[in-house]
Length: 128
Image 1 (cartoon, rainbow, N blue to C red):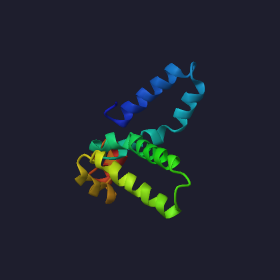
Image 2 (cartoon, rainbow, N blue to C red; image 1 turned 60 degrees about the vertical axis):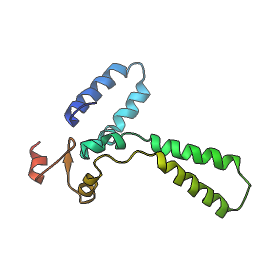
Image 3 (tube, rainbow, N blue to C red; image 1 turned 120 degrees about the vertical axis):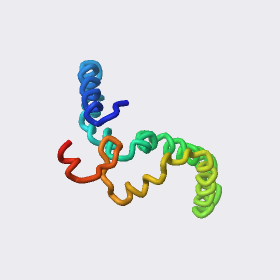
Image 4 (cartoon, rainbow, N blue to C red; image 1 turned 135 degrees about the horizontal axis):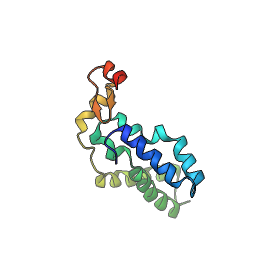
């Protein structure tokens, strides 16, 4: 993984160039969503590992889907919602905690980040 957004753009360009002949539609899709794929550079570097993965969401809902599919037509809507709630409550015990959670306050307070580091002044962002 690149340390800065500029390095990531260069690596992105190399990847697209390398694979565009073999996988043109996939590279077109990646190129179209470039900014969204690299948006994690606008957040604290310690949070990147959490932002770049969707596995917690997918694995959590896979568990719920599997269980609710098996017990279909076995109760009311309220019973199903209670079961889903308890499944999610149980699943959260194995979730990883956010690293350096105290930086969430900076994100909530709209502190701007560039390449994972907070900007001290808005003029820093325009100069870069």
